[in-house]
Length: 383
Image (cartoon, rainbow, N blue to C red; front, top):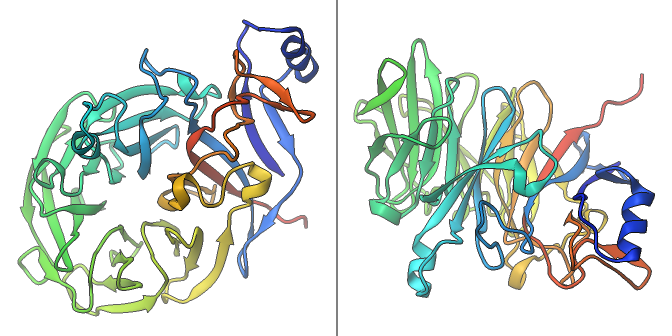
C-alpha cells in the first residue's frame, strides 16, 4: 500500500474543490501497491514531507528555495526529523551566494500538514550530513562552507555549542563509547577519516579532541577518492561511502582491518541492527549490506505510484541522506533534487491552484512540488 499525505484547510475556493474536499473527508489518500526489494524484504513507501512551492513557511516563500535536501537525521525518540538543504530561501540574489548558504529544518513527523510540520528553520548551515546523539545534540557537516566546519547544536537548533574545523566534511556520525561521545567526520578530498572524543560541560558539548585511528584521530584511506557518508555499526566499526571510487569502506576504530565492497555511487549510510542501508545517488536505489559487507538486496522506489519524477529536476534527482528508525521500523530517505512530474502535484494543501485536469484532481495544477523525503516501512508477512 502506498500512502500519500494530503492536507485540506478550512478555506475552499470553487464548487469542484468544495465537493472534492467533502467527498474525501480525510487528510490521507491511499493508493494500492506494495514494492518488493530485489532479494530484500517488502516495504510500504510514502512521501513523508516535501517542499510545497505554493505555500510559505514562517512567512517565507518556497517558490525557488529551499532546494537540494541531502542530510537527514532523526531524534532519539523518533519524533523529529532534521533535514539539511544546500540552498536556502533567504539567499541573496547572486548565484554564488545562493550556492553557499543553506538551511536546516526540524520537522515534526506527527504533523500531516507540511508547512506546520516545520517547527524550526536554521538558516546558514547546509547540513550536507547530519547526525544526532542519544541526548539530542545535532551535528551538521557543512562541506566546504564556512571553513568546512562541523557545527554542534542543541536539539531545537537554537544554540550552537561547538564548531570543529575540518577540510570540507561531507559525512558525520556520532556514537557512544562508555560514558563518552565519539564523533567521526569524513573529508571530501584526500580520503581522510577523522575521529574526535567529545567533552561535555553538563549537557553541553564544549570540546573535541582527536582520538583513535592509530592515535592521531586521523586516517588516510588508500584507494579513497571522495569520502562522503559515514556510519558506525554495533561493534564500533566505521563504514564510509565513496561515490567516486564506487566503494564502501569499513575500518576498526583503531584504524586496523580496512576492507571494502564495490557499490555504484554510494552516498549515505545508516544501520538498522546489523543491516547497513546504502543510498546510491543517481542510481536511485538503496543497497542493503549485512555484517560481512555482503549485499542482501536492493530496494527500488515506486516512483510512478508515488507520483514522483524518477529523474527529478533537470535529471539530477538522487537518493542521498538516510535516517533509520530504531527497532526495525523503517527509514526516511532524501530524494535530493526530486519533484512531482509535469509541473503538477497531488500533494500539499488545497488552494487556488487546486483543480481537475483530465479527470484527475491536483492539489497544485500549475506547479511541481520539490525535495520529497520518502518513508519506507517494512511489511510484516502474514503467519
